[in-house]
Amino acid sequence: MEHKAHYCRSSQLKVGLVLRHFGRIGGLEKYGHRLAQAFVKKGVHVQIVTSGVIENSISHPLIHFQKIPVGKWPSFIQMEEFDRSSRRWLETRRCDVIFGMDRTRRQTHIRASNGVHRAFLKQQESINGYRALFKRAHLSPLNRTILNIEKKAFESPELKILFTNSHMVKREILSYYKTPNKKIHVFHNGVEWNEMGKDFDQWLEKKPMICKKLGLNPSSYHFLFIGNGFKRKGLRPLLEALSVLPFEDFHLSVIGKDKNSVHFMKLAKHLGLADKVSFFGPCLDVRPFYQYGDALVIPSFYDPFANVTVEALAMGLFVVTSKTNGGCEILKPENGVVIQELQDPHCLAETLKTASLHPKTWIRSQNIRQSVKYLDFSDQLASIVDLTLGSIGRNST
Image 1 (cartoon, helix red, strand yellow):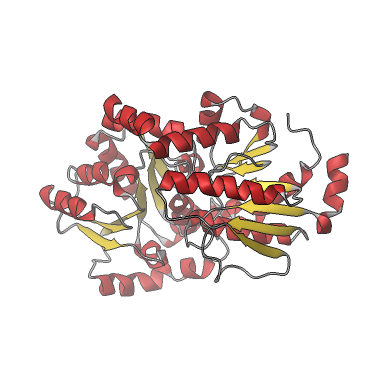
Image 2 (cartoon, rainbow, N blue to C red):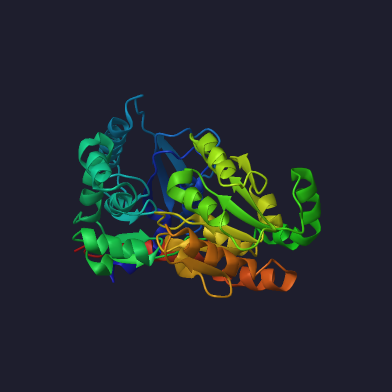
């Protein structure tokens, strides 16, 4: 009953939210903003501990920022410095909850949105071979640092709850670390379902205008690839699969950034896809792409849960993804298909053919959108906050 007493005095409770790059605009940072606001709705004081730019961040009487200076060192030293400095600062304050959202060693609650680094390296082995894995895992200071922090965090006796965004990540943690099963709770990534309603309602009337602006044929079947880091996100196998598709009336739009993007452009040309693939680079607002797209293809080699999976579904698109994207767990035959053999172009081409049998129509798009209504942020975050506050005072072992 002790934790319930704490919960009733929520106006006195303090949460330390640890997120290194809070000022950036990304999936993790956006989630941090929303989580802070969800705690505030319960009357909880939130102390955001970050090294990021905070000038344009959220403003609320119950939300305060503590900026932890980090020098311009190599990445692994920055990671160690932030972990050490943030921990020292938090030790001098009373926080009922220390909620870690980044790679830090000691917290009472964690949202492991980055997945399991050991699993990621294992997946790299299947792509690059053991030699590459050995070099990455054992010679890279960054990988050694991440692996050390990961083990300390997941096996910490102070840890009360470890939130994962997929059952895939939960299985990986149980496989690699001595984390009690009862501490791990799965919450699939949320989505701005209600906020997307207006853009979704307008897709049918806006599609011709957007296609005209981008020089695309609105009557073609439009595949979308949205993500940064084209290699890990599986753009190469996607291009290879498109080159053997049994039909030709399709177009692929690639949205995102990669330092080797020119290489992928050359690959598309080499595969005879120069007229069927457009590279649009990074875009802050991807909703216009969702408005004209028929299907999102995200054949990731490793993704704990790609945010675009649920975003595309909320915008009424059919989704094609891999077994190594935790987002595949929310797919059903009506709204998507899972690639069984990612590195087999013909197998991937078959899933693309399946997608082509589900062009976006008004009725079909509404049914797909409704399939993820339960993942709206407002419901999901409230559940996470309630579970977190309810655990205060419990024994963490």
